[in-house]
Structure formats: structure tokens, C-alpha cells
Amino acid sequence: MPARTVPPTRKPTYTGKCDENSPYGFTTVNADATLIALYRQMGICWVRYQIHVKSMLSGGGIYWGTLDSVVALMNSAGIHLDVPIQCFQGSCFKTPSIPTPAEMASFASQIATRYNGQNGHGYIDSFEIGNEEYDQNRKFAIDDYGPILKAGYQAIKAASPHAQVGMYGTFPSNPFRTMAVLESIFEAGFGQYMDFMNFHYYNQGLDPRVDADSTHPSFDHKWQLMHTIATRYGFASKPIWVTEIGWPLRPMDGRSAVTPDQQAQYLTYVTDQSANSGVIQKIFWYTIDYGYQPNNIYPPSGPMPAFYALKEYVRSKPVW
Image (tube, rainbow, N blue to C red; front, side, top):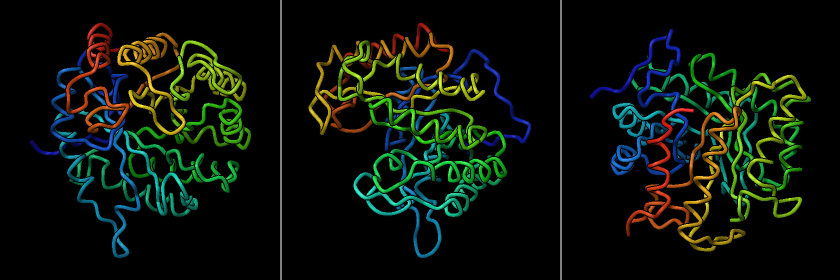
């Protein structure tokens, strides 16, 4: 089947089928036939596919082969793509390099042009301007993010007008960091350069239903804080995407393990709260199709209770 193309006048309307208005997806590094098979079982329509810009840069040019294959496969399967433009140089989580606005604009323009549905390489539905590297690089001044966001947003919209563009997924549990990031964006007038706000929620593996302490808020308090800040600056209708959220079954650095039943319970809870929030537009669980990664709800040994719980939730509520 040829790669999906999108006419310039394409506008999203929910048809009752698995389309771009579906709220559910997974974040993963594998977008392959296994993922498609699992998605068919669950009725999932979106994948947040992680690929590093630095892995695509080769000999002064850009190697598109891996992403071309992923986009073609996902388009042919009717699965919608969200791609963070992340990790330009260095170690993505230890010593990440932050692109300049010009570097972000250049790459964003090229990737959006290639995958705008008009140039024979298929379509990417959504982009994020960065990932967690803006929180990982301790030397990075968060006030410098706004110009990077604007540069990426404008470049993508010029090349692929109907693609959604969001801010990076801020991940620290501490709500004061979240406040600092959003207030920096909105106070400097960059709120218009994102179609959605974005955050990750791991919270050290704690129960998402309660505030553990002042730096580990419940899931509801986290998204409500973001909505309150956006409202204060005149963006009350700005949606939120939760692009990573999960609980590990084995201890991870800074994250406590949960039982399989707790994992299912917590993921179902945050999904239901998202569906009823009136603010959260999409949720990307972490993770599936990722070997024995501790958060994987379907490791090679077989599905966890969370797989069945989320499958049932999607069946009962395919759209919010």
C-alpha cells in the first residue's frame, strides 16, 4: 500500500473510526509490525516515535532511511505519528546539546517538508519541539526555550500547515519546574507558537491519585497547574498532551517499582482522569513493543494486566 498522502485542505473530523482524533497512543522507539499487531488488538491509533536527530545526520546531510520506513509503515497501517525533534548532539540524557533557533528551524523545515503528505514520503501528523533534554541540561536557561519553540513552530507550519506542533515534554515531578517553564513561555509571548502544552508524568513511581509531598503532586494537580497558568495568560483553551506516562515493574534510577496490578490500576486511573478533564487531548502511555524495558506492558514473556485494562478502556471509550 502506498504511503498516505494528505491534501492541503485536510481538516480533522471524527468519523467514529480510529482516526487522528483518537486520544490514545504509546511512546516507543519501535514502530514496526509488532506494534501494528498490538495496536490492532487494542484499537490504538497514535504512536509517539522517538528518533534522535543526531542519528540522522550523516556526512553533512540527513539520512532519512529509518524514518522513511517508519512513516511509510505507520501511514499504510492507518496509525498517526507524533515525532519529537530531539537530541541534536551529545548524550541525550547526560550532556545534551541544545540547538540554536536557527538549527531547530532548519531541521524542522526539512522534516516537515519531507513528511507533509505532498512530496512522496508520507505524512507526520504532529511534532514536538524537543524532548526532555531541556530539563536535563543544567546549563540551559529556560528563558532561551521560547525562541527555539517559535523557530520550530513557524518552520513546520510553513511546510506542513495542518501538522500539530507542541512544546517539549517537561518531565521533573517538581511543580515549580513546570511553573517556571510555562511562565517563561507565556510571559515572553511564545504561547501562540504551540498547538498543545506537553508534560511527562513518572513521579518516581508513586501513586498518581495523591500528593506525596510538595514536589510530587498527584496527576490531577499537575495538569490543573498547567491549565491554570495557561488560563492566566489568556490561553484557557490550550489543550494538554501527556506524551509519556508509566510505572515500572522493576526499580529504575529514581523510580520505585510497582506491582503489575498497581501498574494497571494507575494507568487506568490517569487515563480516566485525562478523559474527564476537558483539557487533556491525548495520552501516550510508556511503553509497549520495547523488549524487557521495565515500563513495558507487553514484554516478550507476555502481556501484563495493564495491557488488558487499557484495551478494555479504549473499547469502552474510543473517543473523549
